[in-house]
Image (tube, rainbow, N blue to C red; front, side, top):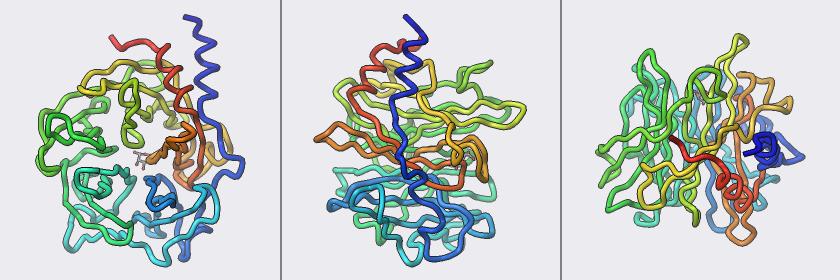
Length: 321
Ligand code: BMA
């Protein structure tokens, strides 16, 4: 295998939108510190983003934006529709963060898994919505410390499945998969992707990004990998492919990162050197993916890629040992 060719292919898989960052706090109707890490979905021909907004106290809530072309003319809710509710949900006391949205056909609703930042650390909560106006909280589904959850859109042998990233004290943090018949009680936990340690770009922590995308080659997984350096952490993105019937089986994993901080809005911000996608949308007709990512914990940016090229690249990646 010619590594340098694959690197070139990987680097070119996603192309940044020329008008990046496409969303900043200027899109909000109220003062805030930052808007970033947004889940994405299509509804009635509109692209919806559910974005994390950090207020001037440092606590985050979720706000909804929609756009016809998914790039410009965003219509932002006058007031945030999804605020933390620490009175009824004490686990949300330090805010709610990083939503990932999955259409759950069986329930005819979008499932949103998000980080509830509790006094005991981050944990994973679930809410359902049909219209991005009202949200039905389903409560905590995974206890602290856990985050970076994203739901599969379908059941496996009558079980829902979720990727998530529990933290083992004093150890690296890896991606796990858990199953549930009712979206409430989760079990059959299995680790699917592990940090590669040492000098690797994904040596310290890894976490699933947008929800798994069903393709004819398997479940396409985009994940962030963190490497700690003397000047801080670097968040980059890698790819994996899971078996379509048994997502505990990893078919492929990219050795190289395929996207990383390079532009000023990704290199410099509240947290430097971060690209952090929580949502992507596949246009079934064109095969083009729109990837929405938080840039340096400050703004929202967009990059596009071709599903066929991404799968072709993955086909040439090694199967994990
Ligand atoms: C992660 C999450 C993200 C954030 C990233 C970089 O742990 O908290 O929300 O974008 O760190 O700060």
